[in-house]
Length: 398
Image (cartoon, rainbow, N blue to C red; front, top):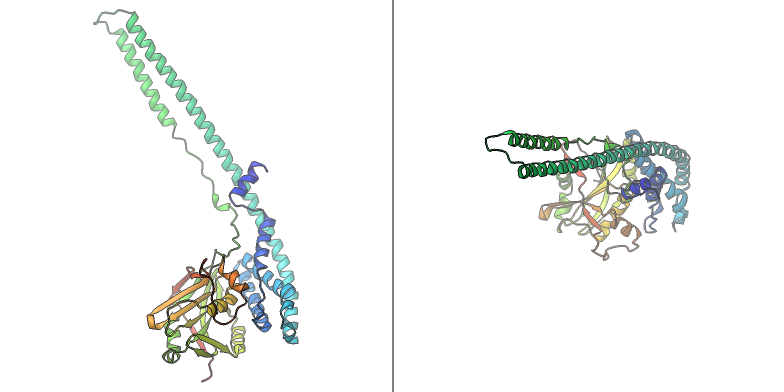
């Protein structure tokens, strides 16, 4: 391996084909959970394509490509392995087949576009790397020249001082004669001036290089999360809707929906589905109502919110599995837990480097123990509160 490639490897830079491979590998992290009805996967597929199209319009091409590839992986490679696959309606299968006919060519075209972009970034980075290496070689050469000059001046100074000393010893001059001291004085002054000149010459300016052209690295662990913007009144409005359930010690849940705008995920709607609550769980019903509303208003799911009437804000084992489905589709999906008894609100995500895969591969149902180390979930740090409009849609039967 040559020095350039070694440097690139040490700096974490990968070539265009490997960057595409990293994206497709990330997209292939689709796990089919037999405990989730296949109909839910088909619904998730609809939202995947909708979100991918939004990413395309927003110029987030890597995210769009990843979602298209997730969709292809799910419905070409994985879904047939679901034990209840035969229960999927012919209508859903036909709609999905039509979607694949559109998505596969889109993904191929986008792949070529990304490869061209990555190649241009990579070539520019190599150019900048060569320029930095040239600058470094020049800096080292100047330092060596400076060092040699200093050594030469030092030797000359030592020789001059030795000559003065020898002259004082060998030549006897009356005290009133000033020739020799004045010569020696002049010599010393000139040497001092040389030192000053040397000091000034050391101030060599190093040319600057624009490092912004270094290709951005893809992190398959999903740590580079886009901001998710939450209306400041979201929690208050939700707790108001949940008040009767909370006083009856029943959980309430809602869906956070919205849109992608300028690379930010904006929560614009709080959707309250038909549901049944208990002190430690909440089960939704008639989910088609939610799906229909989102389809009509072109909304994507950005997470969910629920109450803990008597407990603190945390994610139970059931909550972890519920949130896993959201986060597998969108890395930024957030779980909000409101604990009114303790005046506490938690904003959580599964840890991208461990918890997400662990829960996705866990086949236990209901409440069950999970290991606590490494952590399966953590506080979300990619959300921001904003004074923005929020539309609340309560679909519960009155």
